[in-house]
Image (cartoon, rainbow, N blue to C red; front, top):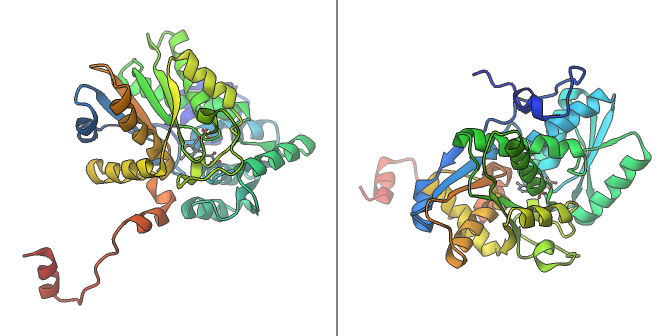
Length: 352
Ligand code: AN7
């Protein structure tokens, strides 16, 4: 099949018309990978699938919402877009805006955006502005600018972002074979994602494509867990810089998704995140960024505390590619051995 991106594939579920110019990088159609080795370590009675969103064109799930947000902005004749970002939204906005011939402005927290994401925003020609504050401070500024000037906000407060992002839930059901999983694990930062996937599952059920709905299981990092703790975190801190967010815009929607689906929003420590991150790479050959490993750590935590039911299908969204944050690996891995260019030296190290 010739895949033409999220808008063409799921057009009937999206607010587009023949007048909408489709700005796409053929995003979506990402692999749903069965993870038996990881499953065996967690609970042999379940089926575990990982949806590898790092395989999207800019390396994260953000492309699903961005294709629609930029296409609708183009339809409205916008010349410029703006967002605040912990990195992935900036990378995606910069790429799609470039393709649409629009100016992109991205505000990022100074010194807190992973190298890969920053490089992407720069190479696509976005106006990259580092603010001396965190994501929440940057979001407040871009919201105001978009209200005062003809510059379209492409954070997930833009309803088209959510509409596009919900396609991730459609794909999970299509790939499982017209059914929803029992549980859906996902990271929670600004919380647009959990809202979008929950909307996607509900719409698919209403359309008769699936018969049941999953429990939505959202995961924050302990140092940036406002929803779990029940109050805004002024200075969020976590190694998972993508979800270093203290005052999520879609807070209420995230809580509603967890409640309505009989799921939960919980948190994991940076140590648990890093353990899951390394584990996934070592035993499944899948390299994701730290924020994406938070729900994997969540699956491990949940199986040890509450536990799954026999036969449960568990899906976890791996939201971003590991190469987004290459520095992180160098912090936790041993450096390569340096040897003379001689077979003897190599053989010795290999124990041959
Ligand atoms: C890899 O790019 O907020 O709960 O500005 O990059 O919808 O915020 C990124 C968030 C999970 C959380 N995984 O999604 C941004 C930004 C990755 C992410 C999330 C993000 P939301």
